[in-house]
Image 1 (cartoon, one colour):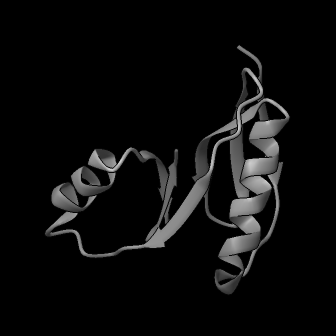
Image 2 (image 1 turned 90 degrees about the vertical axis):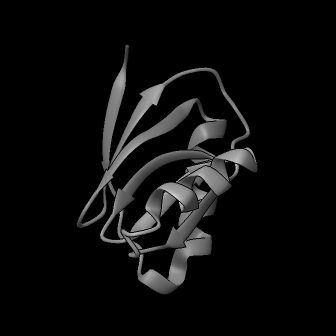
Length: 90
């Protein structure tokens, strides 16, 4: 399996730009598998897919299971978390 590591910086208020960039990567066949602090993204190669990515800030750990289940029931796949930011795709 081919993987790629990229560094790209987005400010917290640029979540729409980050979501667009992640979608663009998936259209090229690179799918997010992990995100780490300081703009570090890990991708794996796959079929070119038009994934929609959504970022949400959630730090409430007490209700985490219900939160993730609600989004999963709505068809969103939880891809990762970084400093309270949750990454989903559909």
